[in-house]
Length: 487
Image (cartoon, rainbow, N blue to C red; front, side, top):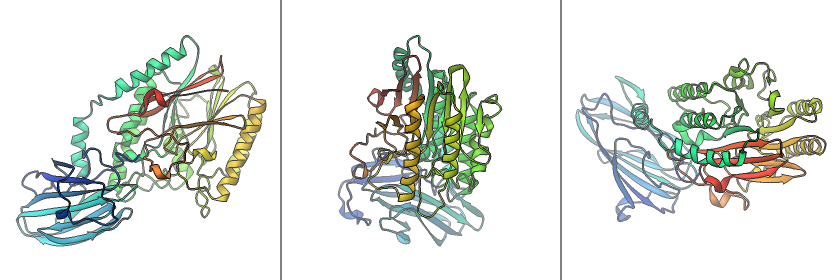
């Protein structure tokens, strides 16, 4: 997602050291093509100006690649102390106190943290932050500490208020209702299997947990049979990777939203779910404990988890469906290999397919699409990945020739695509991630949207009586991104 890829940012104001909450004036210029900060005095009139209460990008509309921002505010200090300022930005920045350059973090780069100290006397001090984005991710994290104030992010305080003020989520119901009308007209009186897909919400940053709740609202409206999380759920959304307190806050909110759903969650781990949430998840067992085991008892013996692994299957006997969820990142630590279905997992899948009743409707789900069209960039997977993916596709193709395979459904690629390949339906559900247009494949389809105002949920509906599948897009792209295919 090019627009709105802005991740949670923090403030140097609203501190115990301030006598009141200061205002931050900001100016935005678009179409800055260089890989370094400009001389802001030469840029002319800004495209956008405004006032906010944080040194961040939150609420600055229509921010995209190749832009620069100038922030200026006044910090009011009660007691003279030595302040340590920490600035982490993607891309470049410079931070000034009272007109003096304190931190130089210029240049096009990923998130880089820099620190500096300065004694601030009691009184007012001018703060100036210059920032630019070249391409891909955009982020600013601002921290400070003194001998009497531990290092802290005031973003949490500010964002808690913002969340509370916007808790009505007024855009959710209308977008769910609009998609449900299309679903109801297609369904008629036929029996269907239906479930919403949540995938790749990590690029919503600290808003990720909210979209779990939004998907739950959709599941209730559609009377879903279960819910699906196809990975990259958001536990390691930056800055959770570097801030344990922030990570714990995300972790608690993710669990609270998932627990609101009184049905079954099925989870296929993503490549960004490892080592997430305060660094807790270093093993498949830990991921399984958080995302899969809580629903075992509720499933009444129908949810089958492979011990110490994050793949398994869920049976729905009354509708004659078996939902298989895989781990496409099993051997992620083997050199450059990425997006792999491991040998142990493939052997398990082959045995499971062999023992499945031929009349049972099989749906296979994973984070990563093994077919090349699942890639959302022009980059190619390494040879070990191709080898394992080909083995999986051959297995599914052979199974589809003899038995009932609805298809394989994945996330990861931040695009919306469908193809039938060697007799197997492959459908990619778009997540919340941004896409750089010049890196996309010619066949990719991506609905650009603002995750603060729009949902991006595909509801999958399967009609066994006619062997039809219809996906209904809630939010981003609307009906244009619905998909139909048979099996």
